[in-house]
Image 1: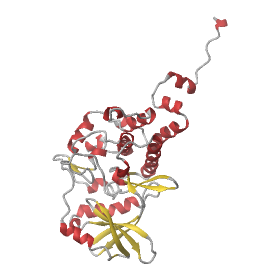
Image 2: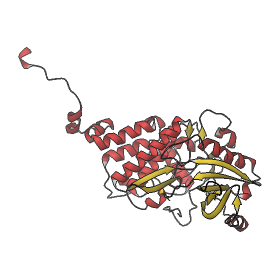
Image 3: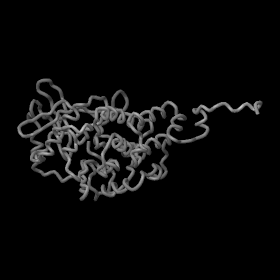
Image 4: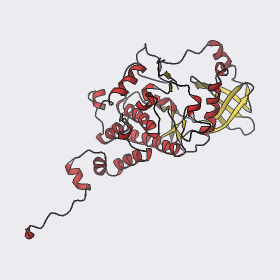
Length: 350
């Protein structure tokens, strides 16, 4: 499940990136060998009531293992906070907060959280084990339009639920979307609500756990308003979905370059057209219009909600002429088929 990103060899990975508003920091500090050893030593041991079986992966904050509860025999993905972070009070609080935040959610397109575990000095989360691959692995080339519509629709449905519960993910990216093959088709699940915003501003509010002048997120998928450290709502997550949709349609990100260059580009200009980014690319114009609306630099120009974006996708599948009009593609012939016009005047009354 190793991530695949298209970037120069000199460029740091874009995942798990902490961006400072004053001094932009790229990438994640390399893991120290002694920490890797401590993580590897967990395999075959007990972590609370869970038997740790094997390592699945990890990021800047935690390492994920496959583990089984010795009483219930339930197999989970066990996310364990890295030992070198235990002395960082804010990081521990953010990790504990992830359990509280994610436990609010229950949706087919969101990975679930079962419980928070404390084993000695270490903390862990028992997560639903999703037997899938990161969306990253699918983004090596353009995907068929039907597959794009399916995956984007599933992400929007998951977001609609999260936003209704007062949560904004704030770090949507392909590495935080797992795709299973279920009943002969893709089934996407959004994971990792570790830096989600709790809209009610209560004890789990991200503002309490983020230092002044810091923006947490991933530059390639971050909305312009998030890059400016402005107040966020669900439309910021929709921008991130737009970046992933662009990748699905084009097999490339909207903007190239180092993270600081990507941030600067999206603050200054709109995302390029798909065919500009990949010359010769042929894309469904209706799906392209949905993508551009998700990626609008001004949040007011995006879909207002995940439900509104879903409605546009559903209309494309059921009535392309109506979808064209709704999305502002004013083909006269198609418009006449769906727009009700008053009857022409009776010439005998002139």
